[in-house]
Amino acid sequence: MTDLPTAPAPGSTSPLGYADLPRLIGLMAGDEKHSTSADSTLDVLWVLYDRVLDVRLEALDDPDRDRFLLSKGHGPMSYYAVLAAKGFIPIETLATFGAYDSPLGHHPDRMLIPGVEISSGSLGHGLPIGVGLALGLRSRARKSRVIVLVGDAELDEGSNHEAIALAVEPELVIAPNRRGITGLRSYFWLRSTPPPVSATASVPGFSVSAEAYPVRYVWNFGEGGERTTTDAGRAWSRKRPGSIAHFYETKGSYEVSVQVIYEARWRAGNGAWNALGYFSNLDSRLYRVREVRAYLTDSDD
Image (cartoon, rainbow, N blue to C red; front, top):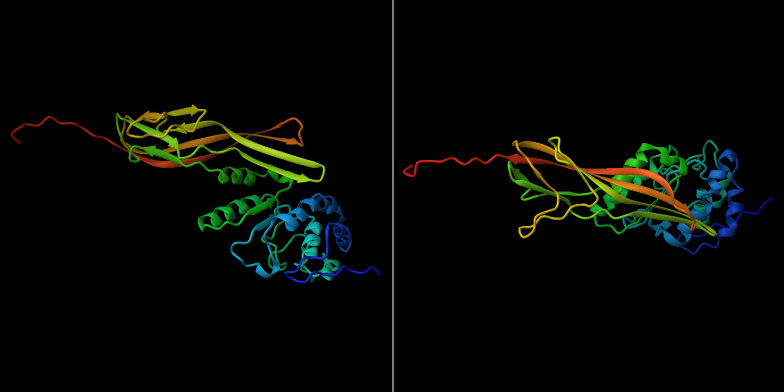
């Protein structure tokens, strides 16, 4: 009979290390078809829980804790092994993996496993949830970090495209006074230039990097007029006009928008960059344009 490793006490420094993980994974059987998927996440998960994440068993409800979301929930054996090594799951529970009454199912369940933030498995959900979670934490002035582990095949899901776009949403500004007058210029710009987006995932001896940067801005003025620029526009001030202007000839309410188009690429290690294609995000505002008329009147009136 194989001796089980000793589970760490909650809040203590784990006596288990990276070298124990294969042994812990070996306690789980029944989902061998997803073993490759599990093994591919092992190094990343260990580094996150051992060196990066501020997550503790005794403070699972701390609003300032970091959040980790395993979007590719199929093949969670490595995830369970790391959680067990860090004291979130009793070691002996690993042997019940996949059993009818086991908390360790073939997809993680946040209601059954301490430290699991989302129940995952259906591809394409983790990143949208993560973006919404990050925006919610930001609105509450929390300093928590949100980290999502996404599988490569998930990037074919449209929900991930939309999440990436929302994560770097631009903010459209219109001047002067956010209301226009027919026959006079209205000026448009972004409050800040959207920054490039980049990320790198590394394991010993190998790394993959991806980045995306804005290349075009498509301005739609809501009455059929459209303009494409390579910059986010210059802000209007009383001393200096903006760089993107439009004349409205007819009063009314117009849906004004700007679409920021990003070009994305990736590379392995220090190798050549490979194109990933384009994605875009959008911001829009309702813009009211009024009409001002001048009338000649009798000076005696």
